[in-house]
Structures are given as C-alpha cells and as structure tokens.
Image (tube, rainbow, N blue to C red; front, side, top):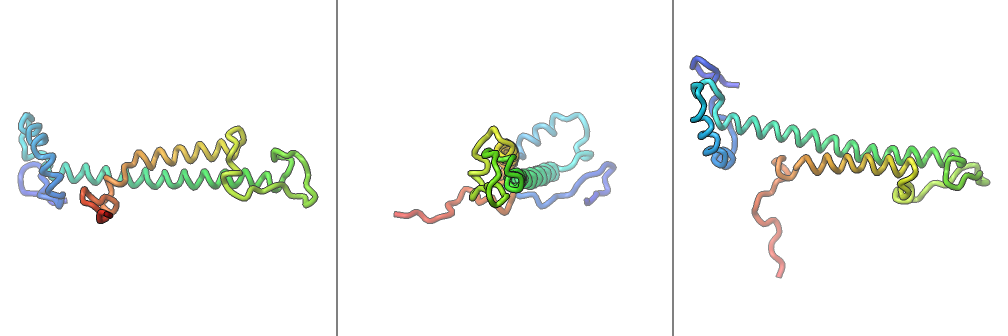
Length: 159
C-alpha cells in the first residue's frame, strides 16, 4: 500500500484497467459527492474498483477449486462403493458368491452409479451436483483474466 502525506489514508492510483474504472466512474462519483465526509479520507475510486476485482477473482478461484475437489470426491466415493462390492460380493445387487470369490466390478463409471437408490449413485450425484453448482456459480470465464477472451471473435468465420 502507498500512503500519501494527507491527514487520512489515501491510496494513490492503482493499475486497475481503465475500461472498468471508466464504466464505474459515474455512479461511484455520484455516491462520493453525496457523502458528508471529506473525500480525502476514502480510498480512490480506482482503488475501490481494484479491490472489488481482486476480491471477485479470489472468490472465483476458491469456488472453482472446491468445485473440482467435490467432482473428484464424487468419483472417489463411487469407486470406493464399487470396490467394496467387488471385495464382498454379498453387498452387491447379485447377493451371491462367484466361483472366483470376488464380486462383479463394473467396466465403466456409469454402470457403477446408474442406480440412484444405491450408495454409489447417491454419493456420485450429490458430490457432482455440488461441484457443478460451485463451478457454475464461480463465473470463472468472466472473473479470471486468463479465461476471458472479450467480445472479439476468436475463430475466423467459415463460409
């Protein structure tokens, strides 16, 4: 943080993008003009915008991280349920011992979690739903710089 020599803490100009600061400039200036307190005791408008942008980026990153963790946990718990049915065949839907002594292990995840009445299906649906909700609510394409491509066309038009 940079401090000026005025009586209250005042932030100097920050490297906030000019387009965002210009877009928010008019409403924030109107709100600052209505304020009864001296303007020099507040952070500048660009600092406020910059702080808000950084807060949103951190929130977005956290939600994206926890969404992916919940997604991985959904697969892990479904695999654990399927693996326990493999080692103990009496837990599976067939309820019988096979000649090998092992139970049936599904070839794909979809076969393992297809029944929402079984523990693997319930765990998978719950974790994947929460993970998808976190990722959707993170707004990562709009909040993170390395994902947002702007309004320009990314692919040339195909005739």
